Structures are given as structure tokens and as C-alpha cells.
Length: 192
Image 1 (cartoon, helix red, strand yellow):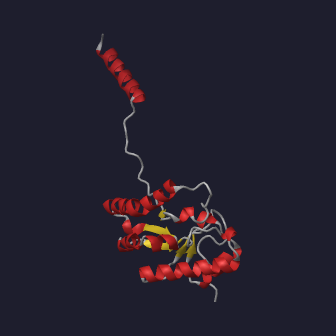
Image 2 (cartoon, one colour):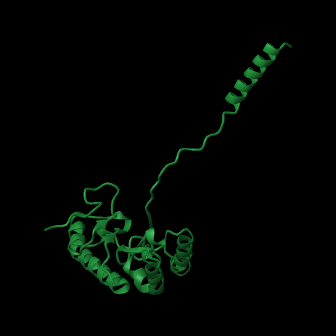
Image 3 (cartoon, helix red, strand yellow):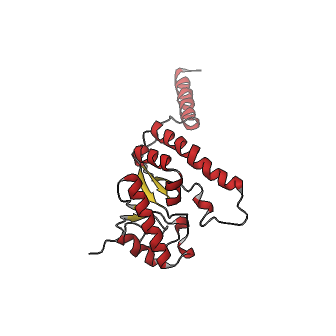
């Protein structure tokens, strides 16, 4: 084999190798933003929208497990990844009352605490007057436990009605994470 043929063969082999195994380049750098929020329903999910004659002790036990074991585990995980203060916990009033220690732990982690109904009742389960009372009770509970007025509301099962928005505005909520697409989803409009 002559020198020219050897060079040509070598060149062909290199080209074939580059096609079969192209050089790896690092993936493009991307900025990805996520919203991380937790619904601390615990037992309340079985009292409101999840109430059913078929609920049993195992259901309620899982709710207590969520409060007594799940919350500390999540807080430990968030602390490990240094994201504790970037998480919003939406907590029903019943969970705040049943698990005040865990609610304080959440607050002390630097997380935001938003309201999530009292007993996870859906808007369709209540009259306008009842819903107004539930929202007022949740604001009172959250304020007494955390020392500040809650800014966010997540409606249980995302069940929201037009009057819900008005009541949330009356209580000074800044946002309602209540629907995938609704003109009042984020942020709530403040009235003058």
C-alpha cells in the first residue's frame, strides 16, 4: 500500500468513526424554574371533599402519619437541598389545629404558609355565607399560629366560585392558586 492510499484509508476511517461516534459536546445550559408547593391535608381530606361512608381507620391513620412523619421528612429533605424557604405549604385549618407543632416547624423552616380551607371542604359543598365563615376562620387560625396574615389561598380540589374571589380579596389575599385557567387565578385583583 502506498503512502497516498494509506493516508486516504486513514482519512476515510477517521470520517467513518466521527459519523459512528460523533464527538460529545456538553448539553446546552438551561434555566428551569419550578414552583414547589405542598398540600398538608392530613386528616382534613377525609372530612371535607374526601368524606365517604367507606372511609376507615386506615384512611385516618394515613392522615396522622402525614402530619407526624411526613411533614418532618419533607422538611428534612427541603433543608438538605437548601430550598426550605422556597416552598409554599397550603394548610387546612383543621391540620393547623391538629398539628400545631408541625405547622410551627414549617413556619420556622422559612416556608410560606397559605390557606387551604378548614376541613378541605369544596366550594360547591357550602353556601356563600358558609364559605365566607370558613375563609375568615382560616385567616384567623393562620394569623394566630404564624403571626402574619396569609397571602395565598388554594381552594380544596380547586373548587372556586366567583364570590370566592371577592371574599379572598376582602381578606387581603394576594393570590389564589385555584384553577388551571381562570381570569382570577393569579394574582387576585385589589379593589380601591
